[in-house]
Image (cartoon, rainbow, N blue to C red; front, side, top):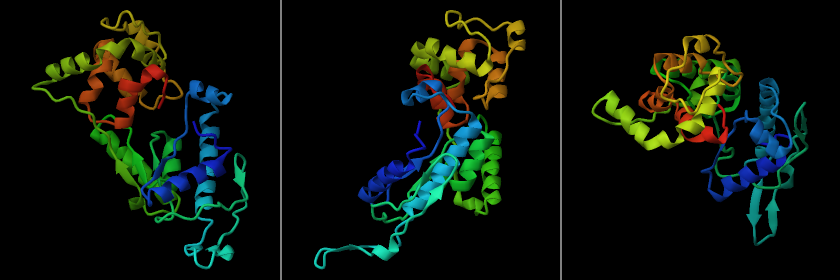
Length: 280
Protein backbone atom coordinates (compact mmCIF):
# COMPACT_ATOMS: atom_id res chain seq x y z
CA UNK A 1 0.00 0.00 0.00
CA UNK A 2 1.52 3.29 -1.10
CA UNK A 3 1.14 6.21 1.25
CA UNK A 4 -0.08 8.60 -1.41
CA UNK A 5 0.22 11.57 0.96
CA UNK A 6 3.99 11.24 0.52
CA UNK A 7 4.29 11.47 -3.28
CA UNK A 8 7.44 13.59 -3.16
CA UNK A 9 9.39 10.83 -1.44
CA UNK A 10 7.99 8.22 -3.80
CA UNK A 11 8.87 10.34 -6.84
CA UNK A 12 12.38 10.85 -5.49
CA UNK A 13 12.95 7.16 -4.84
CA UNK A 14 11.73 6.04 -8.26
CA UNK A 15 13.66 8.76 -10.03
CA UNK A 16 16.85 7.79 -8.23
CA UNK A 17 16.31 4.16 -9.24
CA UNK A 18 15.58 5.22 -12.81
CA UNK A 19 18.78 7.28 -13.01
CA UNK A 20 20.90 4.46 -11.56
CA UNK A 21 19.38 1.90 -13.95
CA UNK A 22 19.88 4.19 -16.97
CA UNK A 23 16.17 4.36 -17.67
CA UNK A 24 15.29 0.70 -17.09
CA UNK A 25 12.97 1.24 -14.13
CA UNK A 26 9.18 1.29 -13.96
CA UNK A 27 6.42 1.78 -11.43
CA UNK A 28 3.50 -0.61 -10.92
CA UNK A 29 1.00 2.02 -9.77
CA UNK A 30 -1.77 0.11 -8.01
CA UNK A 31 -3.90 0.74 -4.96
CA UNK A 32 -4.22 -1.77 -2.14
CA UNK A 33 -7.53 -3.26 -1.08
CA UNK A 34 -6.72 -5.12 2.13
CA UNK A 35 -7.31 -3.90 5.64
CA UNK A 36 -4.32 -5.94 6.79
CA UNK A 37 -2.06 -3.88 4.53
CA UNK A 38 -3.67 -0.59 5.55
CA UNK A 39 -3.12 -1.53 9.20
CA UNK A 40 0.64 -1.31 8.59
CA UNK A 41 0.08 2.43 8.22
CA UNK A 42 -2.33 2.74 11.14
CA UNK A 43 -5.33 3.12 8.86
CA UNK A 44 -8.40 1.31 7.59
CA UNK A 45 -8.77 0.72 3.89
CA UNK A 46 -10.55 3.65 2.19
CA UNK A 47 -13.41 3.16 -0.25
CA UNK A 48 -12.57 2.35 -3.84
CA UNK A 49 -13.57 5.87 -4.84
CA UNK A 50 -11.20 7.44 -2.32
CA UNK A 51 -8.37 5.05 -3.15
CA UNK A 52 -8.58 5.72 -6.85
CA UNK A 53 -9.20 9.42 -6.35
CA UNK A 54 -5.98 9.55 -4.37
CA UNK A 55 -4.22 7.43 -6.98
CA UNK A 56 -5.18 9.81 -9.81
CA UNK A 57 -3.80 12.77 -7.89
CA UNK A 58 -0.66 10.96 -6.78
CA UNK A 59 0.31 9.69 -10.23
CA UNK A 60 -0.33 13.11 -11.77
CA UNK A 61 1.73 14.77 -9.07
CA UNK A 62 4.59 12.30 -9.33
CA UNK A 63 4.74 12.64 -13.11
CA UNK A 64 4.83 16.41 -12.70
CA UNK A 65 7.72 16.09 -10.25
CA UNK A 66 9.56 13.81 -12.67
CA UNK A 67 9.09 16.46 -15.34
CA UNK A 68 10.15 19.43 -13.21
CA UNK A 69 13.60 19.44 -14.81
CA UNK A 70 14.00 20.65 -18.37
CA UNK A 71 15.56 18.32 -20.90
CA UNK A 72 18.88 20.17 -20.86
CA UNK A 73 18.76 21.30 -17.22
CA UNK A 74 21.45 18.93 -15.96
CA UNK A 75 24.91 20.27 -16.86
CA UNK A 76 27.16 18.34 -14.46
CA UNK A 77 30.26 20.25 -15.58
CA UNK A 78 33.07 19.36 -13.18
CA UNK A 79 35.48 21.82 -14.75
CA UNK A 80 33.24 24.87 -14.35
CA UNK A 81 31.52 23.59 -11.21
CA UNK A 82 28.07 24.12 -12.74
CA UNK A 83 25.66 21.40 -11.67
CA UNK A 84 22.51 22.47 -13.48
CA UNK A 85 20.75 25.32 -15.27
CA UNK A 86 18.67 26.80 -12.52
CA UNK A 87 16.21 28.47 -14.88
CA UNK A 88 15.20 25.06 -16.28
CA UNK A 89 14.28 23.57 -12.90
CA UNK A 90 10.79 24.75 -12.03
CA UNK A 91 8.33 24.19 -9.16
CA UNK A 92 5.04 22.50 -10.05
CA UNK A 93 2.76 23.89 -7.33
CA UNK A 94 0.07 21.18 -7.49
CA UNK A 95 -2.43 20.71 -4.70
CA UNK A 96 -5.38 18.34 -4.76
CA UNK A 97 -7.80 16.83 -2.29
CA UNK A 98 -5.43 14.04 -1.30
CA UNK A 99 -1.91 15.10 -2.23
CA UNK A 100 0.13 18.15 -3.09
CA UNK A 101 3.67 19.42 -3.57
CA UNK A 102 5.45 22.60 -4.50
CA UNK A 103 8.40 20.77 -6.06
CA UNK A 104 10.64 20.61 -7.95
CA UNK A 105 12.60 17.40 -7.45
CA UNK A 106 16.28 17.86 -6.59
CA UNK A 107 17.31 14.83 -8.70
CA UNK A 108 18.20 15.21 -12.39
CA UNK A 109 16.07 13.49 -15.05
CA UNK A 110 16.81 9.97 -16.21
CA UNK A 111 17.72 9.02 -19.74
CA UNK A 112 14.13 8.20 -20.64
CA UNK A 113 12.67 11.28 -18.94
CA UNK A 114 9.69 9.54 -17.34
CA UNK A 115 9.76 6.03 -15.87
CA UNK A 116 7.29 3.56 -17.36
CA UNK A 117 4.00 3.22 -15.47
CA UNK A 118 2.33 -0.18 -15.19
CA UNK A 119 -1.11 -0.89 -13.78
CA UNK A 120 -2.78 -4.16 -12.79
CA UNK A 121 -6.35 -3.30 -11.81
CA UNK A 122 -9.34 -4.89 -13.52
CA UNK A 123 -12.20 -2.85 -12.08
CA UNK A 124 -13.87 0.10 -13.84
CA UNK A 125 -11.86 2.41 -11.58
CA UNK A 126 -8.73 0.52 -12.61
CA UNK A 127 -9.61 0.99 -16.27
CA UNK A 128 -9.86 4.74 -15.75
CA UNK A 129 -6.54 5.01 -13.91
CA UNK A 130 -4.76 2.95 -16.55
CA UNK A 131 -6.46 4.80 -19.39
CA UNK A 132 -5.19 8.08 -18.03
CA UNK A 133 -1.66 7.16 -17.01
CA UNK A 134 -0.47 3.63 -17.79
CA UNK A 135 2.04 2.64 -20.44
CA UNK A 136 1.33 -1.05 -19.89
CA UNK A 137 -1.36 -3.02 -18.08
CA UNK A 138 -1.33 -6.55 -16.70
CA UNK A 139 -4.58 -8.27 -17.60
CA UNK A 140 -6.93 -9.86 -15.09
CA UNK A 141 -9.21 -12.06 -17.16
CA UNK A 142 -10.38 -15.68 -17.12
CA UNK A 143 -10.78 -16.30 -20.86
CA UNK A 144 -9.54 -15.00 -24.20
CA UNK A 145 -12.89 -13.26 -24.65
CA UNK A 146 -12.56 -11.60 -21.24
CA UNK A 147 -9.03 -10.49 -22.11
CA UNK A 148 -10.20 -8.93 -25.36
CA UNK A 149 -13.04 -7.14 -23.60
CA UNK A 150 -10.71 -5.83 -20.94
CA UNK A 151 -8.16 -4.68 -23.50
CA UNK A 152 -10.93 -2.78 -25.27
CA UNK A 153 -12.01 -1.24 -21.94
CA UNK A 154 -8.48 0.06 -21.37
CA UNK A 155 -8.32 1.41 -24.92
CA UNK A 156 -11.66 3.20 -24.58
CA UNK A 157 -10.52 4.72 -21.28
CA UNK A 158 -7.36 5.99 -22.97
CA UNK A 159 -9.48 7.65 -25.66
CA UNK A 160 -11.56 9.40 -23.00
CA UNK A 161 -8.39 11.01 -21.70
CA UNK A 162 -7.29 12.13 -25.16
CA UNK A 163 -4.58 9.49 -25.50
CA UNK A 164 -3.70 7.23 -28.38
CA UNK A 165 -4.99 3.81 -27.21
CA UNK A 166 -1.96 2.17 -28.80
CA UNK A 167 0.15 3.83 -26.08
CA UNK A 168 -1.15 1.20 -23.65
CA UNK A 169 0.41 -2.23 -24.06
CA UNK A 170 -1.89 -4.95 -22.78
CA UNK A 171 -0.19 -7.99 -21.23
CA UNK A 172 -2.53 -10.96 -20.76
CA UNK A 173 -1.38 -13.50 -18.22
CA UNK A 174 -1.33 -17.25 -18.54
CA UNK A 175 -0.19 -20.00 -16.20
CA UNK A 176 -0.23 -23.49 -17.62
CA UNK A 177 -0.01 -27.03 -16.30
CA UNK A 178 1.15 -29.26 -19.17
CA UNK A 179 0.02 -32.86 -19.21
CA UNK A 180 -1.47 -35.45 -21.58
CA UNK A 181 -5.06 -34.55 -20.65
CA UNK A 182 -7.12 -32.32 -18.36
CA UNK A 183 -7.40 -34.88 -15.55
CA UNK A 184 -3.64 -35.41 -15.49
CA UNK A 185 -3.10 -31.64 -15.47
CA UNK A 186 -5.46 -31.22 -12.52
CA UNK A 187 -3.76 -34.02 -10.63
CA UNK A 188 -0.37 -32.46 -11.24
CA UNK A 189 -1.56 -29.06 -10.03
CA UNK A 190 -3.08 -30.63 -6.92
CA UNK A 191 0.20 -32.41 -6.24
CA UNK A 192 2.13 -29.14 -6.56
CA UNK A 193 -0.17 -26.85 -4.59
CA UNK A 194 -2.42 -29.08 -2.50
CA UNK A 195 -0.62 -28.23 0.73
CA UNK A 196 -1.94 -24.65 0.48
CA UNK A 197 -5.62 -25.41 -0.26
CA UNK A 198 -6.75 -24.97 3.34
CA UNK A 199 -5.22 -21.51 3.52
CA UNK A 200 -6.92 -20.47 0.28
CA UNK A 201 -10.35 -21.48 1.54
CA UNK A 202 -10.66 -18.13 3.30
CA UNK A 203 -10.23 -16.27 0.03
CA UNK A 204 -12.86 -18.40 -1.69
CA UNK A 205 -15.19 -17.61 1.20
CA UNK A 206 -14.58 -13.91 0.70
CA UNK A 207 -15.09 -14.17 -3.07
CA UNK A 208 -18.48 -15.86 -2.71
CA UNK A 209 -19.69 -14.34 0.54
CA UNK A 210 -20.64 -17.72 2.00
CA UNK A 211 -18.95 -19.90 4.67
CA UNK A 212 -16.35 -22.35 3.36
CA UNK A 213 -15.21 -25.16 5.63
CA UNK A 214 -11.49 -25.79 5.12
CA UNK A 215 -11.95 -29.27 6.60
CA UNK A 216 -14.41 -30.30 3.87
CA UNK A 217 -12.65 -29.28 0.69
CA UNK A 218 -13.60 -32.47 -1.16
CA UNK A 219 -17.33 -32.03 -0.64
CA UNK A 220 -19.61 -30.04 -2.96
CA UNK A 221 -21.25 -26.87 -1.71
CA UNK A 222 -24.97 -27.32 -1.17
CA UNK A 223 -27.42 -25.67 -3.55
CA UNK A 224 -28.98 -23.84 -0.61
CA UNK A 225 -25.64 -22.32 0.33
CA UNK A 226 -24.80 -21.40 -3.26
CA UNK A 227 -28.14 -19.59 -3.49
CA UNK A 228 -26.86 -17.20 -0.83
CA UNK A 229 -23.59 -16.42 -2.67
CA UNK A 230 -22.99 -12.71 -3.14
CA UNK A 231 -19.98 -10.87 -4.59
CA UNK A 232 -17.73 -9.01 -2.22
CA UNK A 233 -16.85 -5.40 -2.96
CA UNK A 234 -13.40 -6.58 -4.07
CA UNK A 235 -14.59 -9.38 -6.35
CA UNK A 236 -14.64 -8.52 -10.05
CA UNK A 237 -14.66 -12.22 -10.94
CA UNK A 238 -17.66 -13.36 -8.94
CA UNK A 239 -19.57 -14.86 -11.88
CA UNK A 240 -16.58 -16.85 -13.13
CA UNK A 241 -15.68 -18.00 -9.63
CA UNK A 242 -19.25 -19.10 -8.91
CA UNK A 243 -19.40 -20.99 -12.20
CA UNK A 244 -16.30 -22.98 -11.29
CA UNK A 245 -17.65 -23.84 -7.85
CA UNK A 246 -21.08 -24.81 -9.17
CA UNK A 247 -19.39 -27.15 -11.65
CA UNK A 248 -17.83 -29.30 -8.96
CA UNK A 249 -16.06 -29.25 -5.63
CA UNK A 250 -14.17 -26.78 -3.52
CA UNK A 251 -10.99 -28.45 -4.70
CA UNK A 252 -11.92 -27.77 -8.30
CA UNK A 253 -11.75 -24.06 -7.58
CA UNK A 254 -8.23 -24.32 -6.25
CA UNK A 255 -6.84 -26.67 -8.87
CA UNK A 256 -8.56 -25.70 -12.11
CA UNK A 257 -7.49 -22.12 -12.59
CA UNK A 258 -3.93 -22.89 -13.70
CA UNK A 259 -5.30 -24.76 -16.72
CA UNK A 260 -7.31 -21.75 -17.87
CA UNK A 261 -6.02 -18.83 -19.91
CA UNK A 262 -6.23 -15.86 -17.58
CA UNK A 263 -4.41 -13.20 -15.69
CA UNK A 264 -1.04 -14.14 -14.26
CA UNK A 265 -1.67 -11.56 -11.56
CA UNK A 266 -5.02 -13.06 -10.56
CA UNK A 267 -3.94 -16.68 -10.84
CA UNK A 268 -0.87 -15.91 -8.76
CA UNK A 269 -3.15 -14.27 -6.21
CA UNK A 270 -5.35 -17.34 -5.98
CA UNK A 271 -2.56 -19.89 -5.98
CA UNK A 272 0.22 -18.27 -4.01
CA UNK A 273 -0.86 -15.13 -2.20
CA UNK A 274 -4.31 -15.74 -0.76
CA UNK A 275 -2.92 -17.17 2.45
CA UNK A 276 -1.44 -13.71 3.04
CA UNK A 277 -4.81 -12.02 2.70
CA UNK A 278 -4.04 -10.25 -0.57
CA UNK A 279 -6.98 -9.14 -2.65
CA UNK A 280 -7.47 -8.15 -6.26
